[in-house]
View (tube, rainbow, N blue to C red):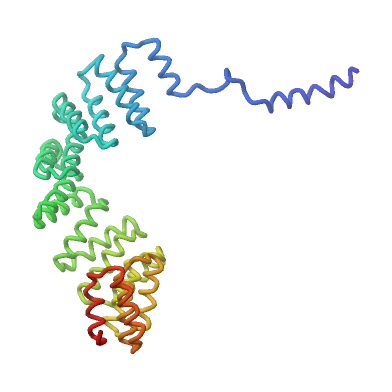
Length: 328
């Protein structure tokens, strides 16, 4: 009997180790700790504010707003509480309440850079571009090296149609922050519209920061294509397909180059077919398959495709012109 008890002892220890720990042994979460503190101190505004930040970080913005309201009823003098409220309202698309909260934050703390930036961003979002510029300028009076303020001003000027000021603002943004990817992308796009070869440098800087950026590679390829550097465009488009074999516009553009620049219609047709595999509703690609058939002498196939395109969109003029070329 004694030997049996000795043998069973390790087994009992092992079984105890395997049992899940009791509720008493479980660690208490930060939120549970905070809930208990609030129960003990229901008039402590800072505790509701702390919990609101936890709720917001978890994406529970409406719950965060309720806690913020409780905090503000107890103490309405804290700028950071209004800032957190502004962010929470913005996340649930209540832009007016978001604006009001950020403005109250700034009234309490006029040099609250984050709130001023949020106001600039919010007015950009609701297309209030002059007001957005005004808030960005307030930031720059406090900190002239604030790259995001220049970025927001650049976007405002771009939307207002002032390309020169937009480019100047984006350039200042990258001067202040040489690793500002979004600013390089905007500079690439605007320089490309102006056919300025600096666009390539800007896209290369974006790729320095994100070597597999499809949008940067695509912008670079488009610049080459639109400015007659088709071989360089082909090279970059092929790089895109190694990253994303289903990139619709790249398949289409490769087909377009081979059809219009090199008259290699059979090769071009393959790329248009690939584009159609990615998006079966892409009528431009479907039309170009018909065009390639027409150029290859397959008139019956071309007529069939042009007619199919017009059944889907009777206003597709290129297909109408194609049928007329073929006598229909």
